[in-house]
Image 1 (cartoon, rainbow, N blue to C red):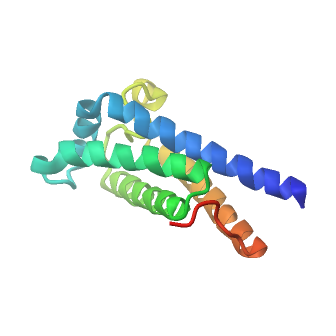
Image 2: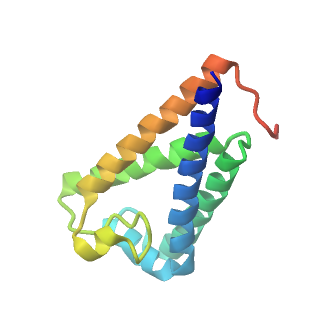
Length: 148
C-alpha cells in the first residue's frame, strides 16, 4: 500500500503543478486570456478581465492547495475541470474556431491549431485522475493535512 500512497501523492503534485502552471501563465498576461474568454461569448464584456484574473488566481491557489493537501482544494480542482469541460464542450458544439486558452498565450495548441477537442480529451483524462484521488481518499478514510 505504500506504493499506492506514493502514487496518490504524485498524482496530487502533478495535477497541482498543471493548475499552477496554467493559472500562472494566464496571470502573466491576463489581457490575452481575457480576449480568449471573450471569444467564447459566454461572459459579459464588462467583467471579462475580472473573470480572467480571478479564474487564473483560483487555478494557482487550488493547485498549491492540492499539492499540500489542503481541505477543499481537490473539490475546487474538480469544479474547475468540470467548468472547463462544459466550456470546451460548448465551444465544440458551437463549432467555435478558438484557442482553448488552457495554458495562456504560449500554449502550443494556440500556435499549432485550435485544439478544443484535444483540450477536451486532456481534461477528461485529468477528471479521471481527480476521481481516482477521490476514490483513494475514500478507501483510506482520508484525513487531510490541514483542516480549515
